Length: 168
Image 1 (tube, helix red, strand yellow):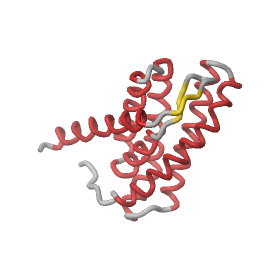
Image 2 (image 1 turned 135 degrees about the vertical axis):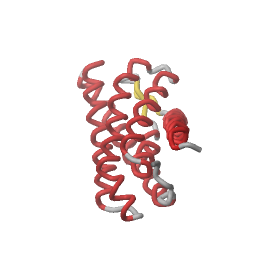
Image 3 (image 1 turned 120 degrees about the horizontal axis):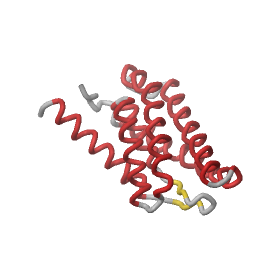
C-alpha cells in the first residue's frame, strides 16, 4: 500500500474511532447542553502513538462529527478547535518521549495533563460565550471526570499498544 493511501486510511480510521468513542458513553450536562464522554482517550492514544498532526485531525474532526451526530451542533465549531488543539498539544509534548522510551514517562503524563487542562479551559471559555460563566462552571466537574477517566483508559492502552509503527 502506498504511504499516501496508508496515511489516508489511518486518518479516516482514527477520526472514526474518536467519533465512536465520543458517542459510545455520553453523560448530559443540562446547564450547557453539552455532555461528558470518553473520546479523549482515543485522542490521547492517537497523539502518543501516531503523533501530533494525526491527533490534531482526528481529535478535531472526530469530536466535532460526534457533536453533529449527537445533535449538539452549536458545540461542533468549538469542539473542532478545542479537541484538535488538545490532540496537537498532547502529541507535541508526549509523542517523541513516548516513542523513544517505549514506555510511559513523566513527560507523557505531563502531556496528558496539559491536554486535559486545555480541554477544560477551552470548554469553560466556550460555555461562557455560549451561555454564561455560571453555566460554564457547572461543566467543569464533568470535564475533570472526562479528562481523568480518559487518561485512565488511554495510558494502559498506550503502554499495551506501544509497538504500533508510526506513519512515515
